[in-house]
Length: 449
Image (cartoon, rainbow, N blue to C red; front, side, top):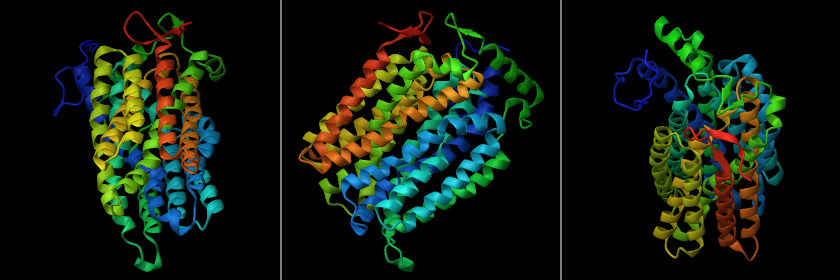
């Protein structure tokens, strides 16, 4: 079969003509929609606190600083268990471990309906982070089992669009659930947590029966297709990339400065991503005075635009084999959006600024996650990807907490938005310090000095 040098699109309406691409198209059709559903559910359960806060903070008398800390403490639990979780998945297989993650996080997410004050809020958000730890890096690792490197930005982009789609769907649904206040003696935010946690438990059961751990186990592929895929993955993941050895051992990977630089970049990116997720509903409600349902509908607009951006940037990054400028350019666009928010005098202007921020920060993610695979494989890939994600996701704690803290001071929301903008500019600068390989965009040997 061909080696797919022209990289035919996997997003076409029907199977590609190229035999190899047709195999990958079958894999994509089997795995990506289901993985997107899983991540959509995970992301809704992670960020629905932003919508719940429209009622919950008043009901429970939570200050903005308390809310920001509680929203962000999720990532402390996530950080502590992220690397062990991914290493366990490498041993047990995705089918068992992802099912475990989804069932436990769904139960904890539903239990959020019963918080009574700051400490129960903190504890359950922390435990939710422990429960979900390893899911996203596990899925990124899982994609490396099925897709050659040249296709990973687009497949990661398709997978990651589910977080933006979660905003498109989750916003209106969350607004509708908030309107159930009084039904059965529960407030709307309690119904939100209950009814958005249960689907994750059910999906976890489905994972056990649907996911396939490795191509060798894919009985849903013809034997010839299965053999081609195994050979192609072996061919495109050699021991040396860009003249430097892959790190087959996690200890060696952790001594590589590139891993820590990527973690720092991701940390700054996540400050922006969760700045949008956790605070956009409250900012837009304060500007518009809309009902909770209308806020949910309006919030869907930036997420819908982000879906388009993620797909276009991921495809263009694969087509050009370039990663650094795609990440940096997207982060600078997001930084511009956040910098404009404090100066927006109307709801329409604020919505446009949040849309720029959402498009930029979401579009940066898929080309970013191609970079670790250029020098990590095996156990190093499992642990290294988890290390980058867990350390980087601490930005999801720092960002929301600082925004809430600043809002409680004279700096208000403008100070928080400008802080996020500065973090994203810093992330873009660090990305551009990565030296691109002369052969065409793979992560190079080191950081430029």
